[in-house]
Image (cartoon, rainbow, N blue to C red; front, side):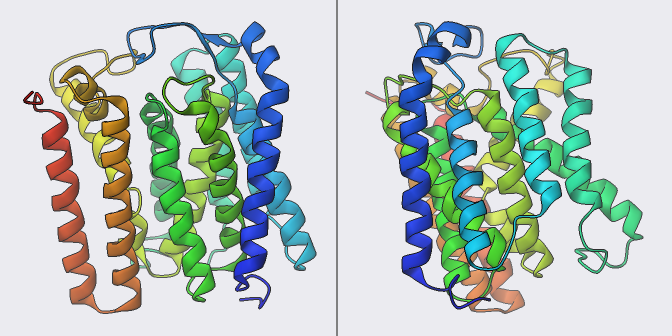
Amino acid sequence: MSNLVSDRVALMLVALAAAMISAGLIVLLRPLLQRYTLARPNARSSHAVPTPQGAGIAVIAATLAAAGVAASMMGLGIPPTLFAATIFIGLVGLADDIRPIPVLPRLLLQAAAVGAVILTGPAEFRIAPMLPLAIERGLLLLALVWFVNLVNFMDGLDLMTVAEIVPIAGALVLLGWLGDFPAVPTIIAAALGGAMLGFAPFNRPIAKVFLGDVGSLPIGLLLGWSLLQLAWQHQLVAALLLPLYYIADATLTLVLRIIRGEPFWAAHRGHFYQRATDNGYTVPRVVGEVFALNVALVALALTSIEVNSTSARVVSLIVGTALVALLLYRFSTRKLH
């Protein structure tokens, strides 16, 4: 890794620049968002009054700008396909924010963006070399499309996405400092984490603005791509541990809705974090517990990498799964007053 990327000051400046750009753009864009992209309460909502959405425009613009400039100054570059796919899927999200797109066309457009990123990955980067490359890449495409969507599904509570993205981004930056993660995704993680911190003051309860699909979809793509880089570094357990709460909540919710015969594609309040607020937990309490869990998952992921043994990976995954299961159980149980 470049010495500049391992320089903590350089990465902190990337994060700071992204935070300032993100916050500044949100201030400038908010009147337009108030006029054109107002999110009105529906069956999924946790808010009671119409709130402007679309602050993801600022978050993604800040992320790409800060990361692009920093990478260029270090003699590196964001993969053009990733850059283009991020903008494309963001535009799909923006169109959906303004006027909802039917499910099938929306998924096909998302798959096109994800497919461009997956299929242009180096052929020598493998997770399961026992599988033919075409099958592995096809499975990765499906997994990343789901990941993009689950990030969107989980963005339903004030500060929830901040509580998820910031710890993961921080972990990836730390791995970059330690020389255990490639340079470009380290820079992207620093910029994305900073941009989310710039967004946080506007999204704290009661939120003044939401990310919207224009933010959650490209955030899912950038984060999923970054975690894929970690998996391609033979750290699959760490790549699963870092977003494990999001994966578990969204996937279990989907499976349960399918089993119950519910229209799983429709807006709903069946996620565990949504049930928690229905069961008497305050929004700050829910977000705080998710953040604390994510910090624990970061510690377990880092342990699985730095100890570098099969037993450490297995134990870290078991402990992480148990902690996630415990929080999901707490959220699905009515709080005793």
